[in-house]
Image (cartoon, one colour):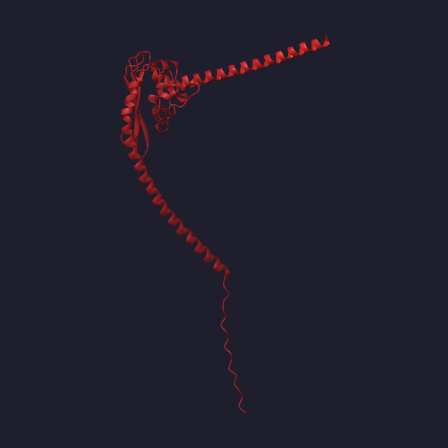
Length: 273
């Protein structure tokens, strides 16, 4: 009887198990790829934002230029009216907390001849501004106008220049105190320099505090500082009136207590009698 041949069974192919390490590395690579793509997309969006910011700056500048021209007639009218008030500008400076800290007694005397202050922003506005001080004839210097200019060049680097002051003999206030400083910043009393040293100080035009105060704080509304002392006095008067009323009310209350005490004493005396 012929033997039966049993065919050999084919050995099944070995299936490799997933490599956990390789999968982890692939996941990290995928995450890095997605993160890099997100960064590139963020950069593209940021470029669009920057482009819109540049457009906004250009539009804002146009609006500022427009309204700067519209304000000029009103500035002129205001200057004409201020000219009718004696010592207007020196009063403004004395009442301003930052500027007053820079004034010597002789500075105040010289500034009594200051008849007009004028801030001129350059036509394009962004490149700088000029501050003009107009003086009547005085005992200190020959100049009728003293100016200081602030400039920003194309790279944004600041600089400043000013009118040389033609001091009269023996009247140069800057010789007594001028030393290099930081744009009119307040010094100690021992080192306090003249207000007029500011005109010769060009060491740090980008941080000239006095120039910024004059342009951005005083010039827009000098009247508020001219009236500052009067407003403080009125406030003080109101406070005094309130204090007087409180004292008066207190005296009345004390008087009432005394009267009550006297009445009680009289009643006690009658009872004893």
